[in-house]
Length: 243
Image 1 (spheres, rainbow, N blue to C red):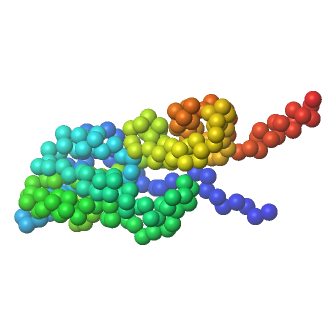
Image 2 (image 1 turned 90 degrees about the vertical axis):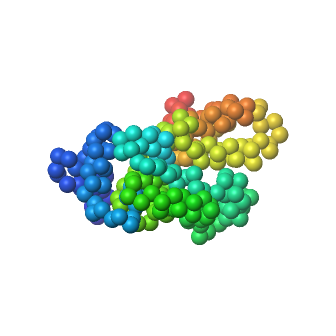
Image 3 (image 1 turned 180 degrees about the vertical axis):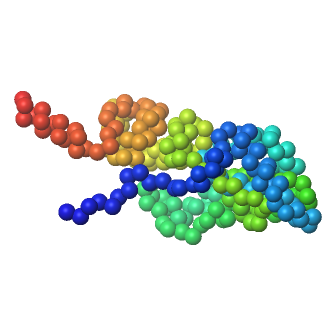
């Protein structure tokens, strides 16, 4: 039998220096201040720190800590330069279709979600900052300033994103999808509230807290939400054989 080459403990090696990893806002912003100070000065170019963010990053905390420690002349949030939610809904209506599950592949990128007028206004404000520090944070921050003085990437683990979604701290696409599932499918069944809601699947299982909240909000009693049916099937047949 061929030996498995699956890496159960993947990792990314980093430099072994003691200052390679910083913990805490004071240490992180201190390193950023040093990195900005090490960049060659250019009188005709603004000093710009761009923090490109993975969706789910706490932008309010990030903006607060950066402004407190680095004292920039201005801090721009890329997410505030997007089209309005209603405009985005119209933009994606075609690719999403009316189907609650399936959509169409499309060529939309983050750049398509920026309002051109808002983006131009932000870039004009950036150009007028001259030699003062400007910080840009958010998803798509590098599109606001493609050639900044320094780029930082703010990332976080998927599990942390899920926890933040469950606490309602970030936009919860999962909850919205479950809500649409109930509104478009479950609630169409006559007398659906008289039945117990059970579900099988990894998505339902991993987000069972969110799914339970949505089901309860629609007046349903929640039964079992399991990752895979095999465990319960095995238990059923074992119990039947023992009876």
